[in-house]
Length: 348
Image (cartoon, rainbow, N blue to C red; front, side, top):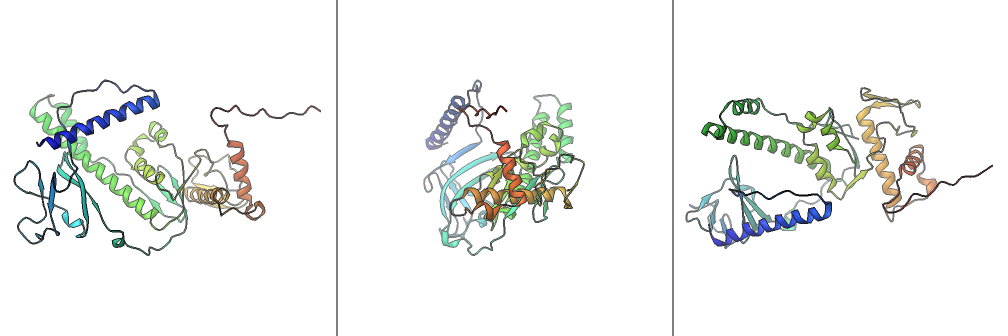
């Protein structure tokens, strides 16, 4: 291994240790004692043309002997890489990373494509509300339902039983453990692919997406741990929360119990009730109604907070808006460091 690769590994380890120290100072929690690592599964190739060089398209070897190959410093022969056809011919290569995974060795390459090459003129779609659940993972206000759960295969369960019967440290034990790691890698790839596909379908062409700050960690610790474990809810929730076009409503907003027409909160609805019925005569499927309620709450919240979109109260007041403002005022908590104001009392 060239000295430049060893230096990159050393710099990466120092950054990880600095991040652990910063986390300890911020949260006050102990990180534990550092352990010795016998192997390192990632090598940074941070200088194109020096640490690595790709022969594809721009080098004139598209149909030659060494097409779709990569030259890595310290390795004499060029290495054939599969999947290079995904990279456009006018892409500019940046840094790369050589990764060792249970299924093989991969080259993670960072490329930059000119802005003009991107597709423009995407069709704009209307705003949408999202309701997260267990039985149906995601329900939209447009009536679409997505299921992003991927269960563990039977082969994985069989390998785990086989591992328990084998002698720890034997050759067969290590072979079975390697097969288990490969199965887990396939499972994670399937869940990540489903989350990315659903994220692309929801976000593309939309300027407003409303969701609720769901306590997915609490779901996982509760009665639905297995269902949450087999889904990609956490991955999708993190990707949506990082999008600037996504508006997150408060966690304690009663999206399931509040009627989107009259604003009355139905306190008697339970988890087994799949149809929402209000005294005003409004009836709809529970999850779809919750998604529509979140969309209305997001529109009301944005119209009251964004500059240039404010309108007089008499223009935006409706039964739902009034009910939402009453709930928001009652659920408002004092800021940290400030004591709540004492309620005013009158003596008659």
